[in-house]
Amino acid sequence: MNNIYSRLLTDIQDRLAEQIPELQLIDLDLGQDQTETLPALAYPAALVDAGSTEFSGMGGLSQFATSTLSVRILTANYASSAQFAPDAAREEAMRAFELDDKVVSALHGWTPDGGYCQALARTADRSENRNDIGLRVRVITFVTAWEAIDDGSDATTVPLRDKKLIITNNQNQSL
Image (cartoon, rainbow, N blue to C red; front, side):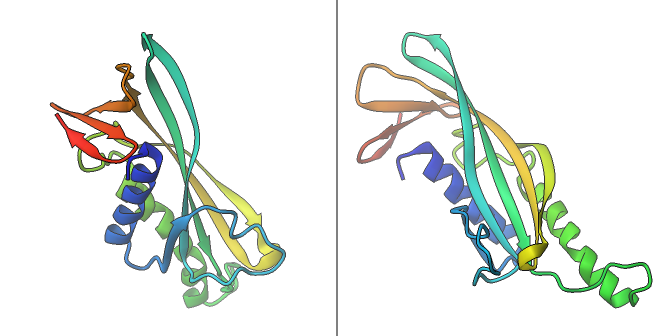
C-alpha cells in the first residue's frame, strides 16, 4: 500500500484485531450504521476512518501533516442497565465501556511498525445515540502527525526513525 492513509488504517485494523479478539468486525467506516434498521454486521464492531488532515509548510513543497483518525465502536446491546436490573444484565450493558478502554489501550501511544508517523494520541471520545436501530455507538478520536517531503520526483517521502520511506505510485523503497 502506497498511500499513507490506506497504510495507517490497515495497520490500525491489524492492531485492533491483534489486541481485541472479541471484536467481530473491524472495517473502514463507510457509514454502515447510518441506516434506518439495524445493519447486518457482526457485533461488536469497530469502524475506522481518517477524518481530516491539516498541513503546514516546512519549506519548498514539503509539509508537516496532522491527521485525525476515528474508531467507532458499535455494540448491539439489549441488556438493561437500570438500577433495578439483575447484576448480570447490568454487567452486560456496561461491558461496552470496557471495549472503549481496550481500544484506547491498543492505540493510544502506539506507533505503527516502520515509524512512518508519530504515536497515536487520544483526543476525544463521545457517544452517538442510535437507540432507534438498537445500537450503542462510541466514537474515539486520535491524532497523529507525519511529514510529506516533496523532492520534485513523483514520490512522497515520509521520515522514519533513521531512514525514509518513499511512497510512490507503484512501490515502497527504504533508503
